[in-house]
Image (cartoon, rainbow, N blue to C red):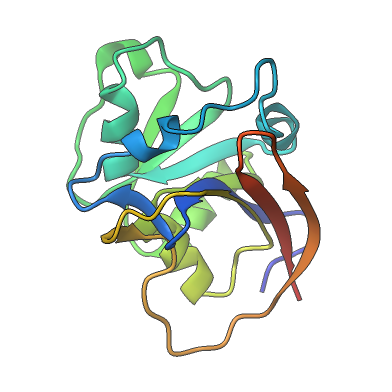
Length: 181
């Protein structure tokens, strides 16, 4: 159970059919409907409310593949049981964590981070499966991509959330904020 001093939040975009990436891991569909000029669509307020980011290896590799300066102002933990090193220029900004979800969370808490942005398909699915996600902000891009990496995957257990806010953007995207009940 989550204590009052910790939270695990998701801020992510999906296609209309629920995919966070295409079958090859591509996220080009996100650029079809650019964000309205000068509108971060709530990202900066969201990121201000977390202490650190926990993402999976594939998400980390995707970000590295952007070919831009490191985009995160918060410390990033990469959850991977295979990865052993990170680019040298990110040593002070990124930490690899491994093991089961409890060990990963315990380690992150021990180094002082309690409110986490959870990112990446498998990572989000693991936290949902353990009923740990406290809040999800999901922006739906109005495009069908047919197949790809699903945000939620398969689950045998009912998870209840309450929609507490929604917004329709001029570019056709819809953003919904859900709180676990």
